Image (tube, rainbow, N blue to C red):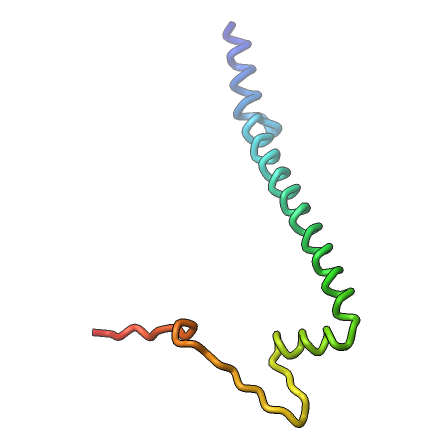
Length: 92
């Protein structure tokens, strides 16, 4: 009985391939699989965006919205609403 108890303790906690290490590795594998699924979805989304941006009008729209680019003969005004401006905290 004592030998079996020592063996179980050794396998669960002390061995290089212990149950604790296996549990940690299984959790890491699960996280990596979740990350893999996330990145696959992001790749599909980005491929759709690339396909859309091949059209010159869509590319121009994207550049105007994201990078505030403009044509030579236009002016762009950025309107900020009061609730979109971060408030400064006063030091007392």
